[in-house]
Structures are given as C-alpha cells and as structure tokens.
Image (cartoon, rainbow, N blue to C red; front, side, top):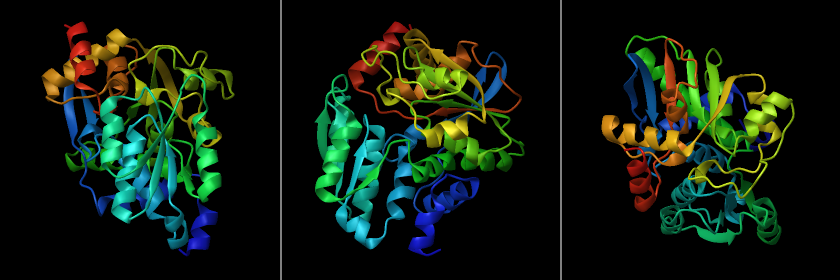
Length: 328
C-alpha cells in the first residue's frame, strides 16, 4: 500500500486495520501475559498490559500511528495529548523512530508519568486540567511546527493499535484450546481501547467500565449522543481515565457494540488493586484496575469466557500504598 493509499484508507478504524497493526507490533513486542484469575469460582482471563515496556497498553496505538508516518511527517515531529500513559507510548515510539515528540500533559499528572515521559526524550508542555483545553494547547503547538497530532484515543490508527490486545487475547485462548472470548471487560476513558477491542473481536460482547464521576461514555451511549463529563474537577485516582468527552470515531464503534457499561468507586478500585497485588503479584494503577473492580463488585454479567483488561501499572508508590491500605 502506497503512502497516498494509506492516508485515504485510514479514516475509519477497521478489523483489517487491527490485523495490520498486529503484524507490526508482533515484530517488535512480545505478547503480554493472559493470566487466569478465580473470582467466586469462575475463571476470568486478565490481560496484563502493565508489563509492556512503558507499563501500559498505549504503546500499541502509538507504534501503529508513528510507524505509518512518511519521511516528511517524521521530520516535522509529533504532538501528543495525555495524562501519562499515551505520553510514554508516543515518546517510546518516537525515540525508536528518531522523531521529535512534544507531549501536552496536565500539571497534576502523576510524578512518575511525567518523569518517565521526559526520560524517553519527549518535550513536555504542561496545562491546567480545570481551566485549559489540552486540544487548544496542542493545536497552538502544531500551528508553529506543522507536526502531526497523535491523539490519545480519537485517532483511527491509535484505535486499531490498541485493538491488537484483543487479537492477542483470542490467540492466547485458542492456544490453550478455548474458543473466545465471549466477553471483554475494558477499562474506559476516551474509548480508544474499548473501540479497538470491539473491532479486534467482532464476536465478543464488550463491557466498558469508567470511574465514578467520569462516566461520560456510559451516559453518552444511553443518550445516543456524545455528552461531556459533568464536572472536570470531580476527584478521582484514575488519572488515566480523565477524558472530558469521547470522539465520534470512538462513539460510532462503541454505540454498536457495547452491551454493558458501569462505573466503579474508589473503594472498588482499591479492592481490585489489592487483589491483583496479592493473587497475580503485579502492580496495577487505579485506572488500569477499573474493569476488574467492576467484576469483583458484581456489576458485570459474566459469560463463560470473560477477558478483563489490566490496562496499566504506572502509579506513584505513595498512591499505591495508600489505596492498598484502604482496601485492607
């Protein structure tokens, strides 16, 4: 496929696009583990994306997007918007490909995410989550350099890249003789991961889980139109899922595929983080634990073969210890 054909083709994410992304990602990254976890006598399958090189699934979409840039686009650089995990994904891919990356991040992003993004060589531009629009800040930067915007979720390439986790889930289950998945429970902020999983696994039901107070996609699906978050200052530990509202490219996929949508409390998130630490011996960040939190709280109607995303593990040590103590 030529560069011109590629530019025309990728206006809407597709299952075929997810498969193309999978071939690219498989060439540079091993599959993350799919781990069995017993919950009330039922086995669920946990996709451990915190074991990616950047500690989150966002590396998938970033690599698919940046590796498709042509030489001229690479020379102009990229601009990303992120609370931290996408930031690291873009920075990691940019470093591998020799591309200059600037990331617009909230001033209250977790310290470890800010430091990790800078350590990967990206320039970080901070904004105030309550009073400034990250899209406006990014647009101003792009106007100066003509760089390519790599959006955290509202980008067809990014959606396809995130969907490769679903391809892996299906292949890993098939590898042990299990057909499925029947249901994928996805952490959800802007909807990039959930939309990608829906495209990757067309026969699976999709359940989305958002943190309490940041349930804009659930409300949007119920209303049949995109609605914003009610209160941008609503407190949450799930910084990875603090998106003001979803984009049409995500909503179009999710509106046809999501069968369940629920929100979870901080206490439920803390309980999931503690269980992952004690039973799977892994660290999951609050936003990466919401899908499992909903399952543990009995808010999801499980199916015979249910997969759950543990989407990231980038959490400050103090926050992790505090939340595990709350779940004691």
